[in-house]
Image (tube, rainbow, N blue to C red; front, side):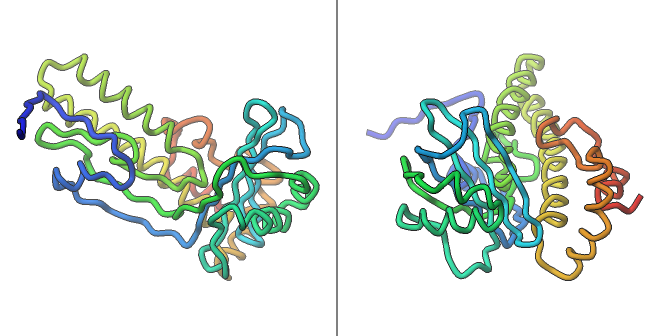
Length: 255
């Protein structure tokens, strides 16, 4: 028989395809990007367990990443324009994945020469989607249900954990849980949109393939080579760092 259960608060953490978000009638905004991000779990990679890297090749619009795991295994990644005449999906595409990675970072050719799949190879859309103010009427959204970031920049888990902490703290500090939910949503919007703004800048400078982007790189990259602190550190230092117009201008070599 159907059963109805009442709760003081519902917290939905059901991912980028959140049904709770739909049921609670939250509107979703999107910033589509013409990039895909592929990942695969590998063994027999010819490098040391102390080696990890994340390298942009702006001339090709490619991003290559590799992160060591336990027992000699590695997570390998490739970000690529969605205009490419392929989709890296399925273990049979491993050869293409390693070949495209070597185009961007030649050292990958040797690293991946004997690599074998331990898990599926899959690609994901590179755009962002989000809910403005992810709380209303006793329902709070956290993680990808509240905001999905481009996986190229690895912020998804960090944002999810921060959502959980910020919501917890708001609930512990306010007896009025409706007010606590709104406080959480306001803080979430602030730190998510900081991350969103910075990753859009990264795409514009390091990935976009257009005459405008090429001119931007001609101006900005030599200055970054002289002073790497021009690159915003939000992907590692977190969204509490400044992300105002002066930061953007400095990154793009306009100040």
